Length: 426
Length: 204
Image 1 (cartoon, rainbow over the protein chains, first blue to last red):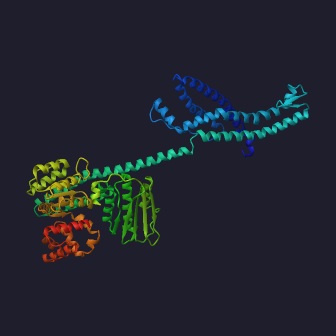
Image 2 (cartoon, each protein chain N blue to C red):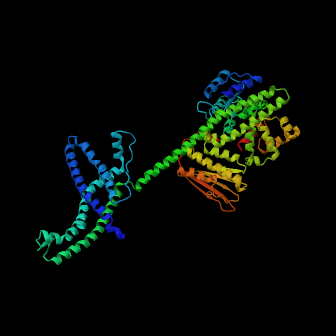
């Protein structure tokens, strides 16, 4: 509108179109609403009116539908439909979905506002900013025709009797018309903005999309965890059992074989099978440690500490078990931290501390190593930070050059059943 | 399944009589009631849940029959499982071995015999892992004494330990004396003290 070509562009006409159609459709909506309310209210006594009142509550839907399309006249951004798709086919799911949506009621409010206040405003702006200047600009014409060249009334109010005045009014009318074009543009813009705010998909609905998005991330992580457990189980109950049976057979064969090249070959095969078994065991443990599933986080962390080359003190009194996803994420953070300490820190001692308080599970891994760890340097920590954030947890790392390094994670979670075995282990 | 059949064959081959081979924890308990075996060999993981039903069945059996020797096979080097088992009964007649060990037929059969006799056998892999833990009671032990204790945990006799460390049996005896003193285990029944030392070691 601030551009110089505004007056000559299509926008004043678009604005006029928007306001005019607004005024016309507003009248229709008002009539429709009043009729529905009166008939529905009257018939509500005999119950027939109740469906009509439901229809009344839903009048916002078609009105808003039309309004969103009308927005295209003055707003190049398409206004998307904020409604959700019902979960099932049919009238009843559709009706319950719509009635539960906040936006349905916002649309009804808009409809009432539209029929009571907005369309008269549309009409007023249209009249004042377009009809009045046009009628002023037409003064000489009116004087020449209806007034018979002697007199005419400007805006049906002021009498004009001389030609110079008539042309003066006409020039004033043209100036006002130019000014009116801006008023029309501004009014239509404001009106469209209000409509968009009330009935189009807006930032508030972004919230529900974000929720949906985080849910799908959680589902992904859950699926990922379930898959890990399945692989662990399959390897454990399949390949590993076969390998054990194989080593057993080879062991027995060695007992029977007379000393010689055959016995040597058997011994070699036996050792190889044993080595494969040991490797497979470590692999399975890395995929999903059984102790985590059976005894929980405390035992699993103690176990991880046992495996660490750097001596690790563990102090992790926990009140019970947590969600599988939380336990798994916490466990893998500890493992990653201990692996990093083994590999990079040069620490002589490390500790894992933590506990559960105020609805939060907190774990801190500390070492006396050289520091300088960087979570953003594409290490395993980045992936872990993602997993932690999916569970609304936080991961923070403090590792100044020269050390010490402190890695801290926390998860919002509640402890659940306490298994007798876990208690005994503690 | 596969493993069970293999084990039955192996035990029969080594001159043991297998009175029952069962598929889940309930059946295991029932079979022990029925046959009163000299030793029970079980997996940690068993149907129906494939969690640690076998281990729990073993602990349960030990509660009702503290002297029943039990050898538990596990897929994992896991202190948590070992602790639960070793705490059952009075700590005698217990074995906790990795499944891999079944392949070393002679070692396995020796361990089986040791457990059946009332000894305690802990898998070398578990022992090795525990060696990494340096906690108070064990910090007082010399490296050599720790080594000896580890071998005791594996179910080795004094003679076997002496051979493995290439020292005299008297020297082993001296180390054991040192261990028992440092772990604050006053003289009593010799076998029992060895078990208690291992328990102290494992729980440390």
